[in-house]
Length: 452
Ligand code: TRP
Image (cartoon, rainbow, N blue to C red):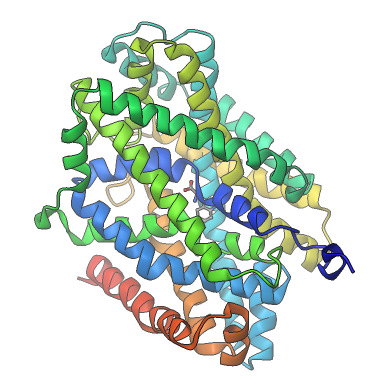
């Protein structure tokens, strides 16, 4: 009997497909755009170290739990959680985690699409030569011109949202595998080329390295810790069921631990490389590292404009960023749309349209927060900052916490043990991380920030 026949129809046939899809979800704007700017705003080294610790001690164990739950339940995350709660004779309240996920994914998608829209705009601008031979000041000014125009931002936000919707409505896994096979390695190669450029020509490489890795304990404020924790969830795509939804398709015989290790390492490596590219170049342009969301766009546009074949490399870079964002954004929509289809027998196309439309509308708030509403603050934050904070720093860690507690305390030990298929020692480490370390990290940091 061929291998194919023992694999259920809905399973991806190859381990690397799961790795690709999960990496496609994890690697996106979080690595290339958000990580460098957050490291810049939070002072560099201390933030990076905290982020790395949270990835290893909190993000990875929860990611393993998500894959295990998804593969075990073989349904959308919300259905899986409520069915597993039933079979484990746990409270129906576990269903609440589904709503937390819905808030997370809707909020994240809403601003993600706006930022990805910038990347689409820059792709076209680069290839068409708009940014050729411009000074850093002009790069800054053209970014400002984009963000000061609600209309232009809305156009690109809409383009990106429609692309996301079309892919999800047609069923994700059809085209995903073959396109990811090309996109991910291309992104990797281009990043290595840019890293080489940064090492050889920025003239400030070591300064960038020092900024990214030098540890200043005074930067480790409660706020920076919360940002690092939230970003560990955001960057790995854990805490709202995106990885759980992909776990459904993972073949039973594959090892969850080693697969998750591969995905998390790739994700972390790409974020660090992005930082090592961006900071030396930022310094070489005489710019500040703490610019905020424009960091990647302004710095790299200025660099590409003076680089040999910069128009080509720049266009390619922003194209790959846009596609990496697309393979992430579809993983925000997929779990909820699958659930709508399961629960209410709503057609995928209808569910996707409704969901993307809502996220698009919410995204208009982010669009406006860069111009008309830039001085409208809620608790000191603009609309964009509020939506980002609420999702990445509150609902994602909360969702992740529930997943960790569910998998390690509530679910029958024998079920999760079998699914994870670790050595007893390995399983105990995983369980201690999910039972104690992850909840403690989230609770301590929440308390420090919200009650302290
Ligand atoms: N991880 C992605 C990035 O770094 C963003 C992302 C995709 C995400 N799916 C998610 C974040 C689900 C949280 C939850 O760009």
